[in-house]
Amino acid sequence: MVLTPEQEQIGKENFSDAVNFTRRDFIKGAAAGGVGLGAAYVLTEELKANPVKVAFIGTGDEGGVLMSQLPVEYMDVVAIADLRQTNRDRAFKGDGNDVRVGLVRKLGAEKASKVRAFKSHKELLENAKDLGVEAVVIATPLVSHAPIALDCFNAGLHVLTEKLMARTVTSCKEMIRSAREKNLLLAVGHQRHYSVLYHNANSLVQSGMLGDIKYIRAQWHRNNSFPAGDSWRKSVPKTDAEALKDVDLTPFKFDDVNQLVNWRLYNSTGGGLMAELGSHQMDAASIFLGKVHPLAVMGYGGKNFYGIEGVGPEDKWDDDREIDDNIYVTFEFPGKNYEKNNRDKCIVTYSSINTNKFEPYGELVYGSRGTLFMKTEKEAMLWKEDGRGSTGGGPDQRLWVVSAKASGGGPVMEAYETTSGPAKGTGDGPNWADNVSRGYTEEMEHFCYAIRNHGPDYWPNGKPRPVEDGGLRCNGVVAMADAIMALTANIAMATGKKIEFKADWFDPDSDAAPETDPEVVG
Image (cartoon, rainbow, N blue to C red; front, side, top):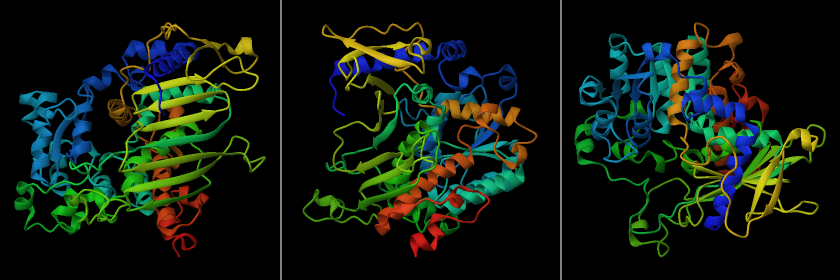
């Protein structure tokens, strides 16, 4: 979506004013505790006095981000584990930037020196009791999420694992059942559930301000066509190659060191663009649609660039990756009145390509009364729809919100021309469209809060605690639905089929799964 700077500024101010108008009570509570969704109800003196002792398993790209964002007042890091020596070193030193700061900079040299480093999660678990470990954060390659989580549950530890939850839906169900059997928490790092930006955007959607939503367009495009190459393709560090040359990696689900380092490129160890990038966007779309399950999916995926002679630079011709480098999928979701009329559907499209990044990644929510643009998880923009019978709208117009009482229903938007530049926001609360946390800190805060406050029964009535009762916003059951969407989309692209989702797939107590369904893969 190509917009002028002035149009973007108008959209951000529209969003801020709408949120300030409709969420004054929430804003006051959140602002009092500090910026962040979790701050309104998570931060407590009791938790500060008794922080949760945590170990990080996987300290590479995503693990480094999480350690940089960890809530030090509520999470006491006592150990790390990683198969790679370079990642273990990186955990302490960081990358020399503000994205992955490293434990020395985050905790201070003295405290960081007390953090134990282990060569595998198995070695860590052998020492977990002596270290007092209560919970783990798993940020390893996708194929290892489930086996590591199951080992941790067997050791009596709560688990927060990165997304995608697992490589197969069957593995997702095994994780849920194990956590429930052991009475332990299972959280999954789809951080949009803890993003204050998405939380407030969703409040506007659920209020009806955007009207009837029939289409959501999501994308995450990248340009890897230049000689610098794909950021997912990495050389194997000599340190790791030497340290692991005699180590059998098959128990950890890897054939060799190259597959361990470049796991995102292979079907047996990763889930491709749909799992690594698309799962974020599909999670956001499902949040805006009320977390309903999709009806069907179809799409196209192909290795259309890498390994094709004459298409890319010469260093791209000899490429052994297995994952698609261009994907385009279409999901059908039920509309609010689908049960009464099965023509009431919302279509969600997703694309991820490797040869062009002209537009920023994010989600566009098209409603009958307004349009919402979530840009790179950091900005939100809102515009009134310009249509027949309206009093103006479009990206060049500022809006104000009419109260429910005045409109006789939910909040509505009115617009006016802005010919002399965008006006300043008129709301009396903070501008939620600027400097917003992406939710990493909040998800870890709430994980710690839940450990201290949800016991001794972490699965009341055999189910995850409801969100309205303070439960995890992205528990295993919620995250499994995101995995089902991503993994089924992969199957649809591989088979060329339109696949209809089945209710049993979303039931953790059923053994049914798309990857084993004969109607899907037969």
